[in-house]
Image (cartoon, rainbow, N blue to C red; front, side, top):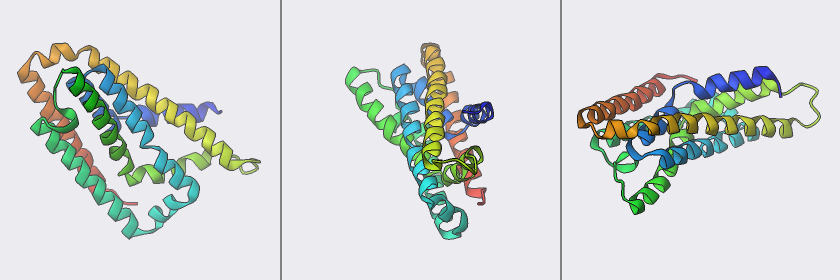
Length: 205
């Protein structure tokens, strides 16, 4: 495992994006356990893109304008839906401290987190362009090497996202006790999701 791969992966994982924003939002609205569930869901959402890169489907997204646009606009619509949910205080970002509700919320959070990553075509193209750079041309088992690198990337994703979530959850009580601050945060998260949706809408292959 090269140091350059680890450092590059850390920069990519830690950079603010849909997964980080969603994990932080869950941590502040639902608490520590659901934030770990969000990190887990975001990590699972990487699997389809990893498989696509290895099977060559990511190359289809890269070369087919129609396939890329179809997945891209699904992602845009979903991000705008998440922004609307944040404003409406519904769905996975609704506050309910009852134990049964928390259990239901964690399941919902995982599904939402998976979808938020699955519907991002740029992630498949990222794997298509990123992983092969760290597989030597004379590698005896290139597929096994890509699986190894992908596994490390996923572990780093979960660890970093969970750290973000647990840190945010540690200050949650101070925030939810202040309705004005919570309202401002919800609007900020909604604006963040909308901005990510707009950026995805304007993106090209």
